[in-house]
Length: 386
Image 1 (cartoon, rainbow, N blue to C red):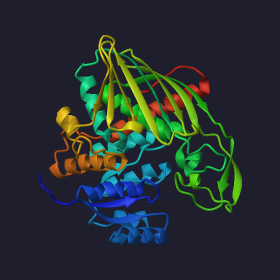
Image 2: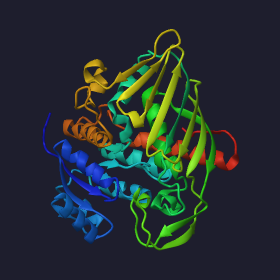
Image 3: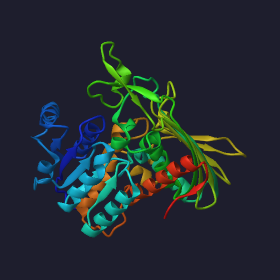
Image 4: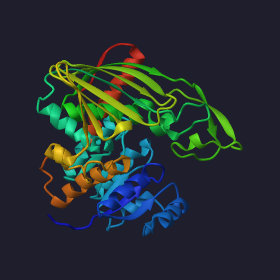
């Protein structure tokens, strides 16, 4: 393999951009430059993180011939235009989810990436906890039998109070869907990744627990509102996006599924939980216990695998960097996704099947999300467009 060090540009310096930066550096590639809301923000973050270049604009970063790959970590409404610009300039792309805010845009990105023969990934990083790869190998080898039910939840509490605020609540910036697009998309990607099944039909009930929120005057980063500031000034803003939802699914093998999504569940900081029930056994995972994979049986003791590469399938070992007893957490998932994408670029065989979530996966997610919105509006089952 050509071990050329890739040079990366990162767009977006809020909560998630620095997580990408850390992951990229941990695989030995260079974050050459960054761009934020303005030059002042980029310069401050570049000094804080010892990054060589702070760009005044996204255009300036894309025009830099040294940049090989762009990580798009900006608000959702910018994903499409920034990805198009990067691809047209011959840059590979890792884009945050959701890939775009409409399936028309995501379909266009899939076609453009294919035409330009570039590596284009969506950051469904939660796949990369090693035991999720173990779950995938176990399920797809048929070890739990025929799947008939998939159920779970993704729960957080960072939007619990009326004073909690984030740009994702604004349809013009985050899209019409809020909690479903933000965290529900991770759960749906996860179960489709593990099972190899596709969601074909949905029934959705979306909820808005706080229809009028108090937006801080001035900027606020994701999760920052939980810190609280007694002197902060607010303005009332009507909110229509979902902060919780109840979803039902049909899968292409006949299995049925259910998901509870919430960003207003007190005490749940960031809990993704799934359970996949098969004819022989069940398998389950909880992101608050990231190293534990549960197997359930009818006729013998249940089992819990504690992450240990020496006991796992080859595919799971490929995303584990440390031996058993050494926890790999949220920052490691960014590292592992970046490693998969960046090594794919180094190999340079763009006809090979990628081992990372692609723009096609991001497009499929948009089709499911649009069906969810249509179902919530019609109060009926809605098929997912192909």
